[in-house]
Image 1 (cartoon, rainbow, N blue to C red):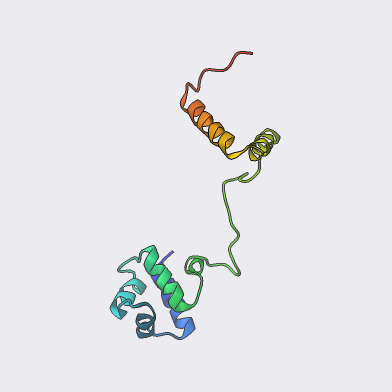
Image 2 (cartoon, one colour):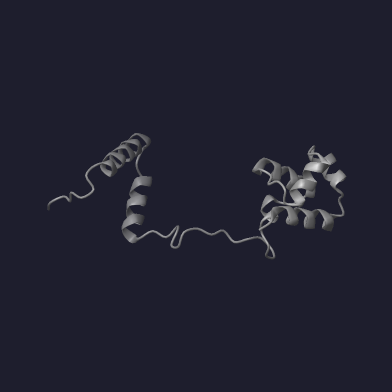
Length: 120
């Protein structure tokens, strides 16, 4: 995606000149020209200024579909197995001191020998 052409498209659709954007953002008109022509890539803070000046949400500078984008994550994200759900529910019932202890022990176990298995 070329952010410069997207900025130009959104600015033109709003009827704003580069001078208007300069007044709204404090960014020089020549800087906006360089961005729109692909000579420089703005950082996130600058993109936030452009979004504010264009009266849009930041995601709209990147999203090309209709409406709002749907949140995505790794496949299966947010889905716990029954064993994980039970562990999570039990953890929620602990008081603050016990939660700290469990977290510390879990970290310690994770650093330990991963190939060793407990004997039963």
